[in-house]
Image 1 (cartoon, rainbow, N blue to C red):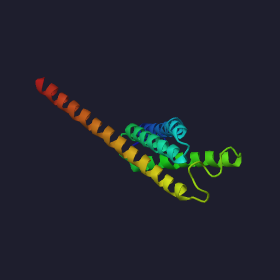
Image 2: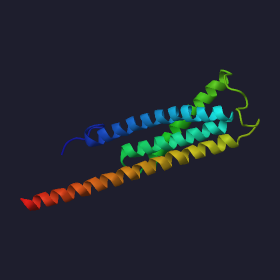
Image 3: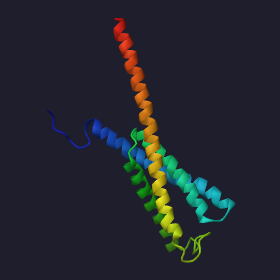
Image 4: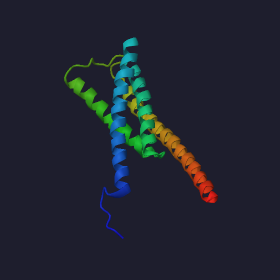
Length: 160
């Protein structure tokens, strides 16, 4: 029996894949928010439209993350949502400190905390739902391919 080294073998490759997929999903979520949320914001100057674009992008990023991990694991969606939220809050806080953002944000009343309570919860739901859905689809596809391969192998071995 060999000595297990962290990051070695199949487990190390899977963890590396998950981290790369997580980083790429985070980038996709942010880019999608900028593109889709920005386009919606141009239609109507309201921060809720940016949040809606972010939710759709985060759902898609979560689905990609679940697909790449090939398992319907909600934890991956939670990690994606937490990292996404942290980056967006850092951007908003930085914009507020630099006085680059209007106060209050367009579409929010002064002292309205509903957005900052509801929006993170919706992000969590979108990322987890996307991750689970993507993982389910990938695992079903893998199971289908596995059963086709097993069937092919059994008919080939019977023929010899």
